[in-house]
Structure formats: structure tokens, C-alpha cells
Image 1 (cartoon, rainbow over the protein chains, first blue to last red):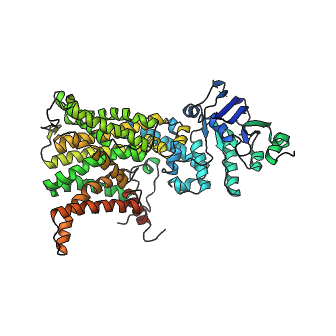
Image 2 (cartoon, each protein chain N blue to C red):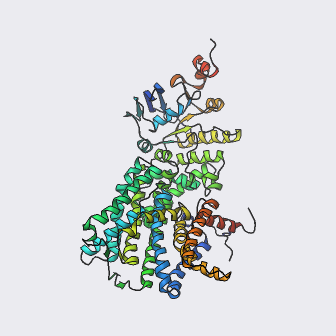
Image 3 (cartoon, chains in turn red, green):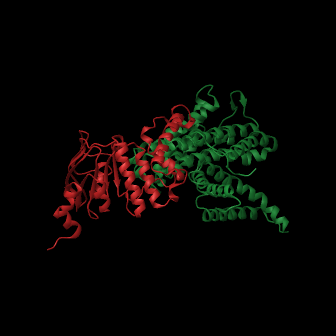
Length: 260
Length: 358
């Protein structure tokens, strides 16, 4: 299946976010098209993670609008975002430490499980059936990400690279339409980065998932992404294809410093 | 028979998801149940039932309730005793005010009332956490201690504040002898333990644990903290309410609010911390440790004293009992902060590999 980049699925218009006197994001607009890989880059403290937190409702912006498939939101909240098919991974892994890999990924199926608490308590009817159905689905994701050997291991015992993969698995279990990845390759060695890049491309290609990606490794960003938006000090300073962004003088000065 | 799962292949997810996936565990639990239901009633005497076994069963049930809330959902509570009291007094009121109310229905209605009260007192958990939540739940303890002492309606206008029940029977089975009471409590505990296990291995349990481990990530995958936390409070209070009803009805028979004081709340919290937070098995270990150990020490010390030729006075025994008990708690918490249940699972893991270390 060759993916085709479609219509605009997520559109952010004039989003501003501040914490007290600190302006994290100032008047930012950009859009994300269906099936594309959209990268957000920028120096430390540029507001990249804040941007993702606005998209899935962890932070509430003071101004601006989020348009998701034509629906206008003043601000999101995490539950609404999850129901709308937005999943994310975290920069500093936010797995459920006390649970096994399997349970972590099963938790990602939470919104799709409808059995009530009594059915669950008696392990009957819908509860029992759902547990099996979703387990089968979760096993597909486990196969896809090649983590079969650790499915019963508590996530706290796993090395960093595998934890990142479980984090991705949990997000994929939601079968999201939009996947927000916050530095999926931070702190990885070259092999792990190659694996992760392959998984990201496969997710995008095989599942048709739209991906919004924050990454510091410019090689990876330039290779995998279709369009790149560049933030600096909470302002947008560049937007376009990887090549356009690479040649943008403002971007170069933000990264390398300008001559005065 | 060696504790090892070699050759036990699972060919379906249902087989992999059962409560005891290892064959030896299934035999062990069957053996324990057979022992508890058949052998114990034949062997135990009245003292053993009244002083040890019945309190152990009922407090295990209560500890299970506390563990669901504190261990699985991560919401600390100091009001466990209050929810037991609500269950006991609600069951009492249903029992004496409604004609022909069956005992089991009264206990379950007591549990349901306690669940509703638990939800109300769980509301602060939506805004505060940790020690602050502990203080907020302490309010439940003080409020209900006061209410059952002062509001005469709850105690059916009895002048002393003490209430009593008699002529207990379940489906025509009179709960007269300690053996009957023991079997009834055991049956209730087995059913409730199964329910607790099912919930914790199912979707609701994963929601609770997700909220406990990382609440922001839980929200992002669509778990509503309000639903998860309040359902944990409701289920936990339901367990505590039923345990409170049992404690009042079948263990004490006649009781006053002091039976469910703050001491009880602390005792239950200690049980789950020592037994193991977030473990069904841990609730039983904790209850056994707190209920049985003091009595065991009390019996053992004079005997040990005789052995080395020192006679210990009764007062000396009870002082020593408290000191040794305290020292053991400190010892366990230092050796294994995750509780006896963790020691147990580490031992099982080692046994599976024995005689090899890895």
C-alpha cells in the first residue's frame, strides 16, 4: 500500500500558551495533513512539547483554535482527544511501572472496552469476551514491534530502548488516527534509532496513521518527515519540506547562531 | 513434585489469562481450599475459631478492600474503619427495621451503603493526593465515629449506643456454632477474593493501576481519573462495608462504635503495607501477620522461657510481645519494603529456576 497524503486533518490556528509571565507558545499556526509525517523541530525550550500538550489537551492554550477534521475546539482535554483518535508517547517515558508490558499495552485498549464493572468482577459475558478479543489485537501489536520475548516482564525492569518501544506499543493499541511522538529516539544508540525509524515509517505506511514527531536528530527528521515546522522561543520560524527548512536563513541562525 | 512449568504450553489466550496459569499453583490452591473447608472444621477448637480464624478471615476481607484502593489505585486512606462501621450499622438498620430481611441481603446492602458513602468521601481524591488525601479521609473516620455515637437513629435509639443482633441464619442454615460462622466467613471471603482478582486482572484494574503509576499518561489514553478513582473508592468501601457487617454481626454479635475506631483504620493500613501493596495474596499475608503473630508470640514466649529455665510474668509476656511485634514490622519493612507478597513471589521465581541461580 502506498500512502497518499490527503486533506488537512488537524489545523492549529494562532495558538498562544503562557505560564504566568512566560510565553511558551506565541501565535502559532500550522496544519497536519492526513497520512503525512510532520516533524516539529527547534532548540531546547522552543515549545515543542508544549505544542503536543496543547494538541492532546494536557495544556489549555489562552488563545487560538484547534480544528480537528473540521470540528472546532477552543481547547482540548485529554479524554476528548483520546476519543477523537489522538495518541501520544512521552519524552521521558511515562509507562505504568508496576504493570507488565502486556498490561501496559492492554491499557491502551481501555476506550474500546465496554464491559461494566459487574461483568468484569464476575469475569462473565462481555468482559471475558473483550479480554480475549483485545488480547489478540494486542498480540498483533507486540508482533509488529517485535517485543514478544518481554510481554510478561514488568516494564520497570526493561532497558530504556525497549521501554520506548513499549510506550509506542501502548499508543498504537489505541489504533490512533493521529500519533504524537515526543522525541521517540532521544538517548538511543544508532541501531535502536534505526529500528525506531523503521517502526515509525511502517506505522505510517501500513496503518496509514498520521504522525506528528518531535526529534532532535536532524538526520532522522530530514529522512522520515514530509514537512517540518520549526519553533524557536515559542514562535514559528519556518515551515515546509525538509529541503526548504534546511535552506531557511532564520532556521540556520536559530540553530547555529547568527553573525552580528 | 517440583514447582516448574516446563512442558505446560498454552494454546489459547484464555489459558494464558487464567488466574493461576501454572498447574502446580492450581493444585496448591485446591489443596488449601480443601484444607480450609474440610480439615480445619474437624481439627480446630472453639478458641482457635473465635480468637484467630474468624478475625483473620474478616480482617482479610477488609484488608482486601483497603488494598484495592491503596495498593491498586494508589489513593491512600485512613478512613477504612469508618467504612466498616458504615457497613455494619447500615446492615444493622436494614436487618432490624425491615421485616424478614435475610442476613446475606442485609450484609450486601450494608456494603452498598458503604460504597455510596465511600464515593462521597472519595471526592477529595480528585483534587488532593498523598498525605493530604490521607488527612481528608481521616475526616470520614471522625465524622462517622461521631455520628454513630451521637445520632440515636443509627443505633435504633438504644440508650448505651451499643447494638446487638441475634438469630442469624443464611438460607435456613443457622449460624450458631463457631464452625458455622467460620465456614460462612470463609465462603464470603473466597467469593470476594475471586471478585477482587477478576477486577484487578481486568480493564477496571488496569485503569486503577494506570492512575496509580502515571496519572497524566493514563488520562492521555482516555482513562477518566474521576471514574477510576471513585470506582476504586466504591469497590473498596463495598468490601470494607461487608467486612464491617460480618465483624459486627457474626464475630462480635453486639458492638459499639469503638469497634471501628481509628485504630482499626491504622491496623488495616499496616496490613496492606506489610502484606504487600497491589497484591491480593498480600492482603492475606498482612492480615495473618497482624492478627496471628501477636497471639502466637503470646503463647510462644512463656514456653520459650520455660525452655531456657526463665519464668516470664504475664505482664512481661505482653510487654515483650509488643516489642517483638514492633521489631518484626521494622525488620520486614527494611528487608522487603514491598511486603511479604514480594518475598513470596521472589521465592517462587527462585524455585522455578532451582537449582540454578539464573
